Length: 372
Image (cartoon, rainbow, N blue to C red; front, side, top):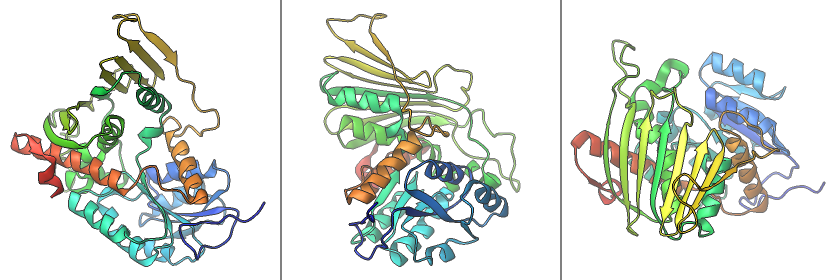
């Protein structure tokens, strides 16, 4: 096999295997390690985490010989790294990214969602990233869930005509326990509509191929975590919301989020409607429904079962994280632009921030107000 060339940074080491370093080895960090383990031509050679238990778990998941670091600073000092995965808690992203982007402009980088917890921090990251040779990929893997990917294909092929309305329903279980339960407080996560829902706002923008201009939201913390206390504090993360987003092309989208609806059939239901019909994806039933006006009627549409990618490691996200990693590695090897970039990460956070502002102040929020 001939050595790989990484066109995004001219001083790259020549190798047949991409060497990964992982910053943050909690639940999502382990998910990334397991996906990279299943990826051809990729190897986790180092990881860092200040928590001893997380380092121990990472050492068990990573290949033998992977170097354990307490801090990301010593990990970044490894000159043989090709790629870094940032999977530390949301509120740590900005400080870690300041170091990665300024100290190692050669490294390729995948950032687990959300990009940062505030729009201002996201905008700073975009400025720091200018002129880097390394590729930066935003980890918004819901694009790669097979039912969602099939829905996107159908919409782009014209199944609904021009998309006019998009609806995403996520009815699911409460937030999982994380190390130190850092995800119980909005100051650490950016708020539920940033932490959890940036995936969905990214899908809205991508599928409608339009810019969000206004956001109106209603939400609350009604059920989850109210009996928990951390140093005398009660968690403040929302567990339900409706969010309506207007787009510059006249399209509109809605998110229906409930995080105390674990007694349900499908966790996600996504539908797109236009003048020609409607396309709908159901997860985890992995069903795609296509209704064509004039041909189908209520209760009688075309229904297809979506076959999982047989080569994808399933993991926690129905194989989407593995598919994302596969695309990321291909972009590095081919020297092509990232499919999901920093601008996508910024906008997905900005819509969530606008939704929180709308809830807090009980008004419609213009995106220009949030983005500046």
